[in-house]
Amino acid sequence: MAEFQPPDGSALPNFPPHPLRERILDELHARPFPLLKAPMRAIHYGFMVSASDRERLARDVVDLFERHGAEAPAPGERYHRVPIEHGMLRWEQHTEFTTFTWTVDDEIGDAPFAAAPPAGPFGAGFRPPGPLLTAMHLVFVADPGEEARTAMLAGFDLPSLSASEVARGRALLATDFREDRFGFVRYLVLDRGMSEATAGAVILRLHEIETYRTFALLGLPEVQAVAPSLARMETALGEITDAIRDSDSLASNQELLGRLTGLGGELEADAVRIGYRLGATQAYDEILQIRLKAIGETAVTGFSTLATFMTRRMSPAMRTCQAVDRRQKALAEKLARATDLLQARVDIELEQQNSELLASMNRRAHLQLRLQQTVEGLSIGAISYYLLGIIGYAAKGLKAGGFLPLAPEIVVGVFVPIVVGLVFWVIRRIRKKHEEAGGH
Image (cartoon, rainbow, N blue to C red; front, side, top):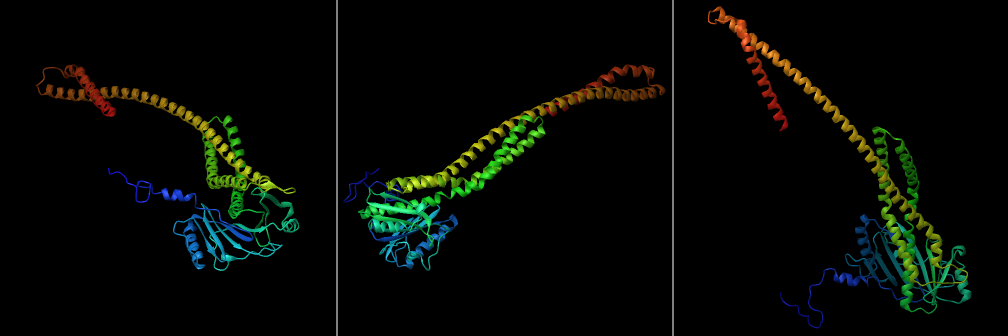
């Protein structure tokens, strides 16, 4: 094999690259932090996208960028960011959802959320790729001072307001996680000297926090829907296990086994139906916790941090999802043990019935053999009787014709042992051939 030689101007030998090497190297840089500065607004949407709609989504995304005179993403791309409508549009494709984020420089007044945010590229002609789940309106502005800051915060729902310092005190962020009258969840970020890179990292993580917060909670309605049937199945299993102790017949055990099988099928159907959602909920919650830690919150006197608020409000929902998941798995294990126990009992009873049936068949076979032997004895006598009768008639005829000097009775008497022995031998021979044929 020829030795590899480094190409011109490169210290790397001309080794054949793995087909995924470039993609793997680019993955770390696929979603870079944007460089952002105040004042600006960001409109962020998250849509659920089913597997059947992904092909249409790809066409609609290309059409969206081209319609605004921007470069469209290449086929297979899952991230694209280009200038659109005097701002910057970022599109991301995830496993089951897609997001659009439009950031635009804007003059921010004392009431940043008083009016609806600009439509930007999401106005006429924009086709939503699926059901909307996340709608976020973020305002990034320089900290105007205590008096104006207090006025800005007063626009939020104060009982739900969370506020904290991030980026080592170089920014203050606030949100109440509630929809405003325009349908957006509002986030306010007040700049206290962040660099553009730090601001981009903080704001991007806030977009992700809002997105993963909403998608993590999708599992709660699912587990709430199956909780009543799960409780009913747990009760039914208890009733069946109680009945197993008192069951003493094969028919009743088979009936109980059928009920257990039905419960197992129902439980498996529920587990399959919500299994993906429970797994996704856990994954989204883990990402959410990572993003909350990444922004490095410091509490502001009188307010809870985002992490504290979400822990208090989301933890019960996550624990409910986890509890239903554990209950389903525990019930499945109990059903499996009860089914194995009852199946073993049914198998033992069936083996006992089969043993009794075989014993009965052996008795019947023995009786049949005795009867056959009896019939064989009678058959020997009957056949011998008829043969001796024929011999007697022949002897009488020969005697009458003068061809036989002996009395016919003497002739018949002489032939009795011969005929009986011959008939006995023939019948035994026939039975032996039948037995040999049956053995083969």
